[in-house]
Image (cartoon, rainbow, N blue to C red; front, top):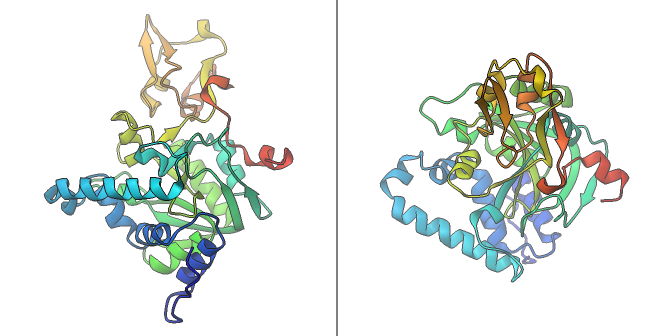
Length: 314
């Protein structure tokens, strides 16, 4: 990226973001500007992207053209190996509760790059955690964009620097620093509500992991995009299976809870449609009989389990 230095009047977190970008191979000035706009005006950005903001509704053709331009520019800066599609520039990986807790419990700086076997996207697929104990919670931009959002709003976890300080400094009314214990409590409460943990990656956010979003299927832009055929989410690498199918009571609790509509009731029992299952684990804790479990499925890719990655050297 450019060797230019920012004026001293620029906020410290913006300067830190800039300096980190300068040290990131392949990160361009365009990427920095894109990342700054995304982080600084997150609610406007997401509101337009999801079509909920009035700008998107009134200027939808222009918004689509601008969105397509941003995607093409991001792909051009990523090089010829990139594959087409907005999902390559902004995407998430489903992580079950245990894997989500690992991401906020790391006690050391982490550098794990080019994780194509885990993050199956062309661009943002690195995990580089600096000051991983710096965790901020941010009001969810997807929920905030809705007229009648799911509550609570403060469920998006921003992990590590320079991202945590950036959102707190630029969104002081919507973001705050929290402890690891508070972050774990948010994860636990959101899972209990039937919401899904996603580890999010974005090319403009230094091409790396930066947040754990706790998503409801009704508000989440990425989950809505999935239903529209845009592959913005990768499976956890697990699927839900019944340990003892004959013990299914046919109550339908798991089917009602599934955020991806991957469970249907047939002949008085629940059937998991594995091609739709993303391995989030929500259904497992909703089964009164306790007969559902998450099982590794190689066809769904590798799980994002950071402690295992660290012990195996990436």
